[in-house]
Length: 412
Image (cartoon, rainbow, N blue to C red; front, side, top):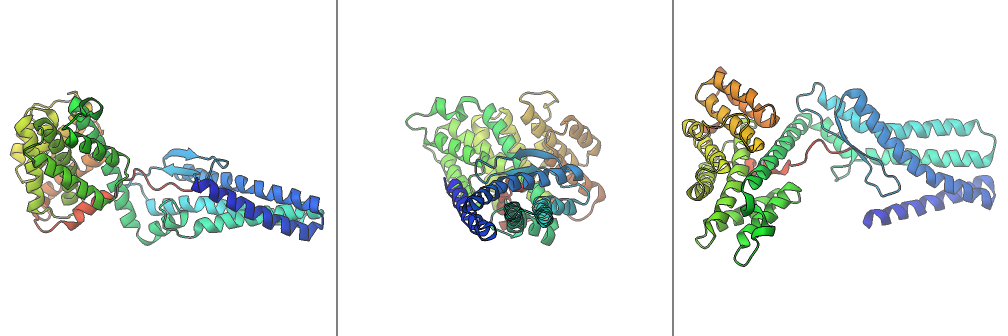
């Protein structure tokens, strides 16, 4: 509703201004009404041109386009979304040009309309063209102004110009979070009815309801980092409570230990953020809750292997996943298990086995695979200390969860 009210208000303002300008030029009420209507109509044409500009630039620069939404008569949410690889060459330049594509298209169209107005002989046509040029120029300049919204072209331009490395890291972290969410969905599916609140919701099943709400908010990115950590801590307290049903406690333990275990592994290996012992103990405790109730369940073994990796016990992590073979169902959890075992093999110095397991995972989790490759590279080159041996405070590792958006911010 707010978007529609905004659209109506802008349209009315444009109509009034265009009518006043046309009346001044044409000195005809009828001509002024016609010119004002055509000027307002040009707003929609400029919106279409704006998104087409983004789309053409994306195609020319080889940026993968994942969504195009051009609906000028249905509000302001017109956008072209791209999903560039964080390792793409000259990525900052490509992204700057991509976000410039829409505004520059509007400004070029405005310039062409001004030139065309100079060659026309009638006042009505001239006022209409000048009005349309003004709308196009206004739209182009407005989109170049940095706003607080991450959907603003100006905001994203500034982000890629001022902190290209941070923007690239944010892109990588966003894709990794997508893989974490995908793994958590696989854990939920493997958990069967325990995770299905529609089946299990009954008196005394509050922990399951809380877990389902947490999963939904996490999947739809409707949670700020601080809220996410706070909610996770409440769930962890429920899992530890003696009154909680063991199956529900195991489901919570699996979910939280896999989620934060994957993120702490990323923080330690990719960003170099050390993992505090307290965080590792919490992951181990939650995984242990699941293991006490469901020790042979696939997702429990994955949770325990993550805890062992963070505890610098790759032998134990490896032993839990030795029987996992390519093609084991469910496929998503199989890929995660193969990659975690590859990480364990890398820590143990078995690089040939790690490479074989990476290939067996078939690229289903590319960011997690890159993380495992980074472990192997670190161990082979011997540069620096083991990333999991660095134990200091890890205030940054929780803030990593803020990068949850898949792909780069869409251009408007």
